[in-house]
Length: 218
Ligand SMILES: Nc1ncnc2c1ncn2[C@@H]1O[C@H](COP(=O)(O)OP(=O)(O)O)[C@@H](O)[C@H]1O
Ligand SMILES: [Mg+2]
Image 1 (tube, rainbow, N blue to C red):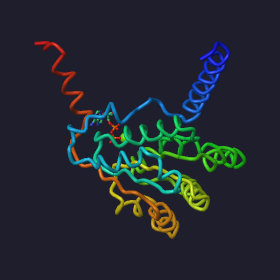
Image 2 (cartoon, rainbow, N blue to C red; image 1 turned 90 degrees about the horizontal axis):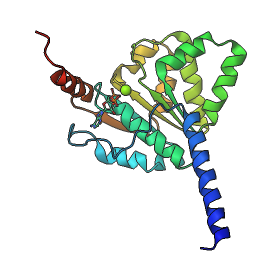
Image 3 (cartoon, rainbow, N blue to C red; image 1 turned 120 degrees about the vertical axis):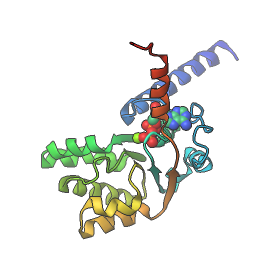
């Protein structure tokens, strides 16, 4: 390569990586999780194939959703974040949200702000809603927010990834006993991948390892 091409290539690389940096920061992700730093031997029943399938990001192109459901500490958030991070690397506009904190923020917004804050979430290529129904019942305003998000993104054929410790059968109950629950769930589950995470908690394993390292006090 001549000097000019090298300088040009350098500049292109620099721009691409600063773009990727910007997309990562905009996404709201708090870590760059990957599938390579995941230990598949720890919980051998996890749907490994389906995780790698999501990681190809085909579901985004096809406007499909993914529900990652199962026990705490089994790696649901990790996989959702790894998929989201991969999407930022591939040029997608991603928004990662912890369900409870977005509900709380939304409840404090005035009407005009609600509209303004929702817009980028409707336009993003991928929205990740992490830990939905952590506190089981959600407020009416959270329910309305969820309905708008899911309804609008469904119409636009844009993907949502949801993680939850709660089995899907109970979601209707947490949404309250109205027709809203049915329309939300209908749209979320239509064109959706269901990944079930059975197994033991990696958090407990890590905690146990820490205790083992701590010298005994007596
Ligand atoms: N199989 C695994 N291999 C490596 N790290 C894991 C594995 N499962 C979980 N972790 C890690 O354990 C912690 C808890 O996992 P997380 O994805 O938050 O679980 P969940 O969302 O299912 O409650 C995270 O730091 C995650 O990176
Ligand atoms: Mg989680």
